[in-house]
Amino acid sequence: MTLNQVFGKNLKFLRYAAGVAVRGNGFTQQEIAKFLGVSRKTVVFWESGQVPSRAKLAFMCEFFTRRLELEEPLSPQDLLEKNLEDEFLVIPERAEVRRVPPEQKKMLGSIFARAAELDPDDLQKILDIIDSLTEKEK
Image 1: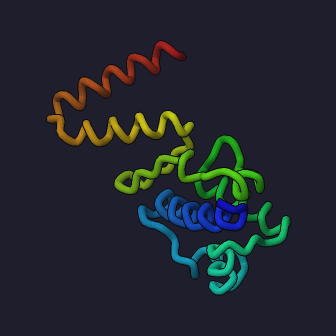
Image 2: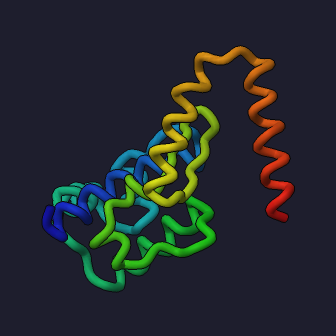
């Protein structure tokens, strides 16, 4: 995948993820255009792989870092080189987006899929176990 394709794919993903984090569903191209101070047509060009100026890239990084409430800020290199979809877990039902290492994303997805089949009492037991494990780490 080329740098331009990676950027376009990341922008589409971040548009969706930021919308989920703010209101439970993705932002439209028009909404992102307004936030970024450009036209919808410009967002269309970017999502098709046209890379913006360094200044606009830096602004996007700040915007998405704030919207997603990330502890570690996004960098222009992240937007241009990484497949960000592999590093984030989007949970629309909870309007939540979390940055996770790619190897954990697979495990968490598996946990969600399996947990859907459990009854509420078993789910509560799992939450209690998770709470006890996180308490040990503190």
